[in-house]
Length: 299
Image (cartoon, rainbow, N blue to C red; front, side):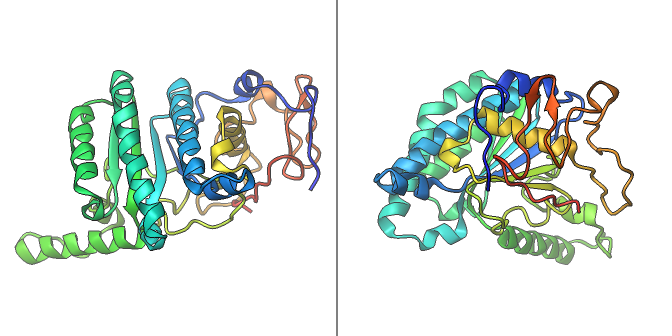
């Protein structure tokens, strides 16, 4: 795989931002934050060092969403499968989660960010559950940005839990309407009041969804980057958003030759050559063959 380097080849963050269509940004971005352990291993550091550095990336993702006006961000922090990791690492991760809430919640609340957690939270240590409950309560009225943290989460478990809630309601109600529609079922999931993700980002080069938001990402655009999560910064987020706006979201329809997100407007109709990475206002966007590997999920 070739790479593009140099100031003339790779646009700055601000020049990337100029290329974005502000009216066609995703309403909800979900991120599988992968690669913390590999980042640490390559530097001869303990795995927890990678997880700790990953908090900086999460903070930067939050700030980028605030800056651009993206209303929802969901971060996959700890899966139910992660409980199978060595007890020492699990304990360190739980301490890091607690440390994150204690260190950053005040700033999140000052920014009027709504913070939520999803997953089988009953498995988390009591102290974490208490902090999560307090933060959710304190931020419940905020709507500038909803940040959802998936902890002890499993997409399959979420669907099973939703089915059980639905069955309980049907069994206890004489007014239940059957059959249940997709919209009705969605109300029993973890985020009934948040739009489904338009864009799913996974870092570290792995091309799988790892049991994350299985119901909600049915029509999401998938973006895979080799960048390890601790190295994922604002520029990487902007590149993902630019790629999203290049996609034609068919949603089951036929190809029209136009970007669903509205990126190919009159002003930038010649800005990106998907095969050759033609210059854009004197700069060059890294292509799929260059810096970022992005399988096109719409084709």
